[in-house]
Length: 307
Image (cartoon, rainbow, N blue to C red):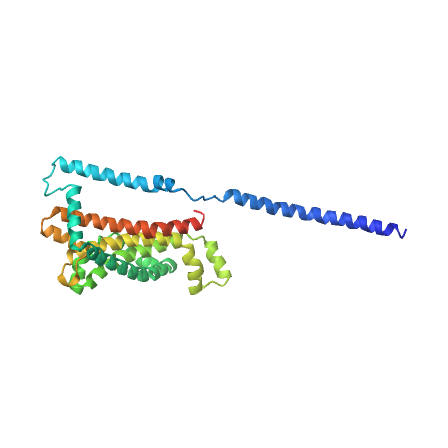
């Protein structure tokens, strides 16, 4: 009997061990199954080859630009308008080279780009808290929400005469027009982003102690980031258009030469190649900022959220 006890104990232990192992095995299998399903649902992003990038990202816009230039050249060659009124792309290119050899292109673009960047940053500083207040305070939203939408729809050029009367022919006039054009777009974009936040996220943040400024920093702004980025993107577009409108009308030797003033100079000289050169430069700078700043930033945010 004494010899049998260890055997029975061992068998019992073995059975117990088997039962425990058998109990633990399904949990292990479930964890492996969940990991496998997650791996299947997560898209695998392989780095594309240079040929693929060139074919999918570079070639389409290049083809579009070539087609536009070709149609432009055909219309100019058809003499629908006199050559002095509708020059071809070659004449505009020569006008650009003339300004380039004079060394004025960098200064012209730099002046407008510096004004646009500073005006946009000021718009972000003012538009972000304004959007938060409008989004979170019902009375304020009811009171000024429609006004913000109306200001966003108002053409920026309408503010230029009033700004000139207020501030004279100065940089303050230009920045005032930029702010009045960009701040409503940034604020409305943030309001739209806050509206898309699931309420459970805000409640979870409050439960975890994220209230007040901490809740805005750690819960509200990160959750509203896609809509906020859309508002920033639109705000830059409004800021750039407002800047061109202000520079086009607010001309003074003390203000320096920006793209808007350069465009107005072409008009005064009746130099159509110069006018079209200024328009192309304005378009290139606007599209360049969009492609180099906002598109990568938006793609990174959306990709990090699995969108």
